[in-house]
Image 1 (cartoon, rainbow, N blue to C red):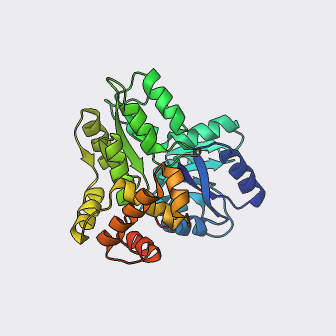
Image 2 (tube, rainbow, N blue to C red):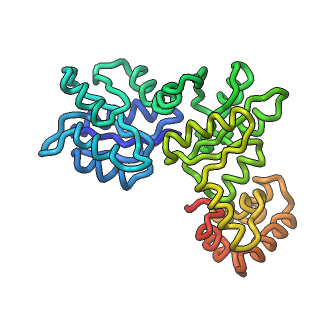
Length: 310
């Protein structure tokens, strides 16, 4: 899932762009900014992968300066300029400020959608030995394309619209003979997510706020079968293990459903387990976390990063 911040001073324009982008399964607008100052603030405060930036705003700060300030931070989101202005000064000013791309507002909708998706492709294809040969917007498409395309590595998100998610797609891809390796690139760093991906067959796990050089190095390592765990991910697992017994993937799945308010019977139906097995998993969870109730288990697991926050 690509998370977007829309920055434009016209509400109608923002609404139209939002509607267009969110018609795509893998694009999600998480915030909007009506001023350049708001764009800078929200880019730092929100969990976004890409800022869609106009150049002209009311007030003193304009889009190029907002782009410069956003890109000045470590692990900053990328910026794609979307504007009506096409002078050399505007284009060069935006690119020099750190914009990854420049698009005019009269571009066809398909061109805008493609440009939004192009951020990671553009980063990888600056490397002479890396080539993106296909893109997938759903987990199902990832499985299909991995089997049909001549690829060495699949760069996989964990969260997708629909029933199939990234871990299951990884499992299906890796179940075939001579399957490509899988490197997970995601926003999620819980024990359940990391262990689930690795158990599914992922060669590595990287967070989307990783520096570009770290992503490129991880792609090269995973492609030749080397482990490519991000330092932050390794530290996360080491910390959780130091606290006590780490939850298994199944225990984390059960507890995540408890966090959603599901009963033991509902959890059993969801995971194809008997109620007795669900209760047994919860007993193990309570023991590992040192708690005595479902509510306390959820709170403690979230505190430790064992399951996703609500």
